[in-house]
Image (cartoon, rainbow, N blue to C red; front, side, top):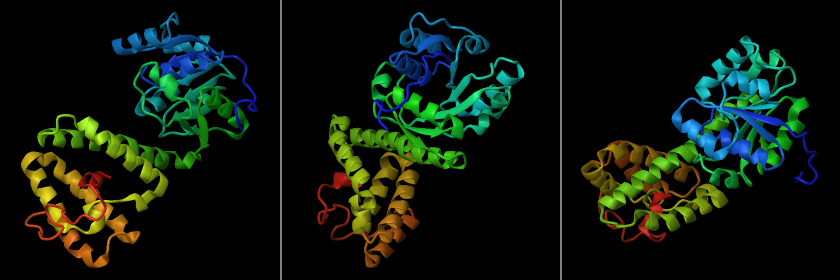
Length: 322
């Protein structure tokens, strides 16, 4: 259903509890569709500055005062703080019956808000599958962003409407699947940042003046290929079974960046398993490769297609970063 077909909810007074990177951006997106941010709470100096920049003229107040003033409350606090916050708001009588209470945690569905629901709140879990910077660029990035949505049946239309108004696309996640859903996103997005940062550091050590410029086209193409083709997009020495090249990689990493060895080996083992399962890695080449990975690359085999990767069949060795 597109935005022109979607029923628009009533214009609501919006409050934010937790002015981290997410809450002010979502409130600003809702403001652009006619909702009214009326209150925000934040503890740290950074949160207060962010609220002032993203939601100018919206008063900074206590969480209880946010709930007192708002029809729709965004609970944008860290995952581990959410259960205690929901319990505390219910116990102090801060919740008004019929108040929409929305959290943005990927880990939780709506059950975490049960104390608030028993106090009369209408619980929604709307998790934007995007990284946030805490700046206005986040509002623009919400266009087309998928949201992991969990809601009671009677609130599904309201949840869908709010997501679409923020420019997002709702993706329904069952309550029991929220932890797995969140783990999948963390595996891809959070670990990607670590891998890219390590790769840039290693290229800098190798003498590359602009690692970001070198990696940008390569990683962009690898990501696009992976999203289109999954495991079939895999290239590089593991998929080819080039045990000598992998052993040389591990040797160099031990010399120059020992902290990266464990991650390299773990990802290479996982890649080898998937390449074997999908018929990309020939079984007759897998034995030497898995032997190198098992002993951490010590004294691994060399030879044609080995340390220099001269016989690589799938193009530039940079593609091994996939």
